[in-house]
Image 1: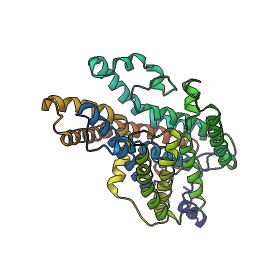
Image 2 (image 1 turned 45 degrees about the vertical axis):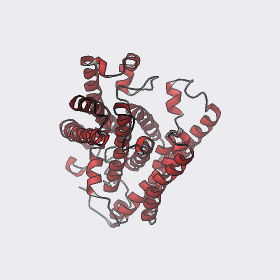
Image 3 (image 1 turned 90 degrees about the vertical axis):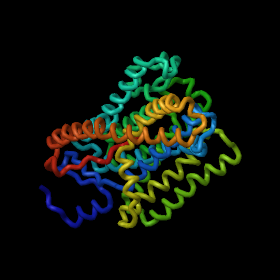
Image 4 (image 1 turned 135 degrees about the vertical axis):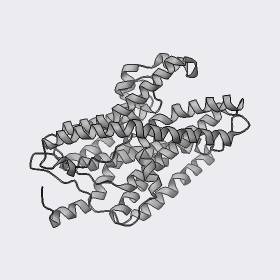
Length: 399
């Protein structure tokens, strides 16, 4: 066991990653509670978005949650910024180190695929048993193999939210390749990546989709949000955190504020991907900076309830749409229509999402995460002079 030194303590306080022996990788990423709380905020926004959509689809065309029918998409933008911040944090100090690439790839695959497969296959089984509940045309066009592997595809994956995970796997692939380079090149890689996406979209803004699903993923504008999160992590790691409270407050005000201005001029219209960068991506970046800066400076922690919701955010993300659909159908059958009580219908759906979240998190995500952690600790022990009990997995990354 290594002994703590003033220099090592200082590095930990700055959010650095402790290193193992020369040539080996041994990460010990700090758990940022505020980051988990932001995940909680993000998943609440996404759930409210789909609850609002269900109100329109299964109700009389009105819903108390109408304001979130577009604003709720900002939860996805917040998730992308958080993901970039986490990836730049857990990879710090691991570039060109023995075992860094396979450990990174294993950690990302173990985090994303197992739970995704469980919920995808469960939904597929439900479709086979009750084929009339879904959109028959959509199911005929789904490429099941590409969906399960989260590869670019013409139609969406089995889970409608899976399109964001396809992007995440692309992001992880680029970060993995960057681990083969000296770490001093990482910021340059990020800036070049952002420049490529921007310039390519200027040149192919009307043909990116026509070029095929792979090009659509590679050129997706939301890539900029992931890159912003990575650059933000390096900014915070350099010690720039004194404006944490101001940054979080400004971001929290701008997120609904900018959308309100946008909605006043274009009511009911979903912003384009590039408009989302300004409306939602920029405020999300400020919120991530502020939340992490406040915690690392020992100032403010966000409410624990949001952190607990953030812990289960991946399960909620994967399960909430099928649960909302099933709850909507059940509510209609229970009430003989359900059009007269939109608020009661939303409460019923929300309760169903909560029950599904608790059940899925306890029965699926936690056991899978523990199994993956045991495998990782065994593998990591082969490269590091640190006992498994001393290692800590980084916070789960969402997609």
